Length: 181
Image 1 (spheres, rainbow, N blue to C red):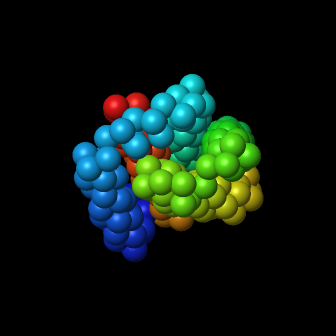
Image 2: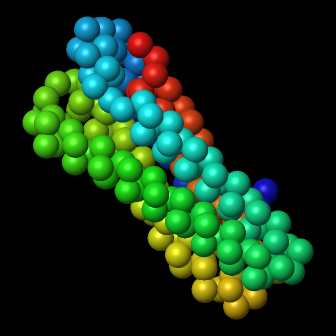
């Protein structure tokens, strides 16, 4: 498997944690369908879809980064990794605006169970996107210097594995929280 075993262990723990949060969201939604329907109707599905495209595109860029490193094309790899980082930052920008809009409308963590779980799920995911962007930023310099190659790109693979997990979590989170009524 690409990357460090520790990263895979971490990914497994994070997937289990999010799995429990997803179950809590689904169970609470069954118990309070009206609260959740009103809460979901207040979310901007277009921004959620844009964020989905940003994360999926960032994952594609991360994959292109690895492919170019393995082919010895470090300049192209640097561009792809920079694009992945910018796309991740785009997600953070749109998600921050969404939080700000909710806060300005008087919605917060304590408004009701929907917004509490929305804040926990999306906030926890937001922190993971921040971590992924930091990882990409830290990897950018070594990639640009040709530090990694086909035989030695473990750190880069680990960073990409982490990012793909972040992407996968959003692919579940977006329809669960924003679309399924």
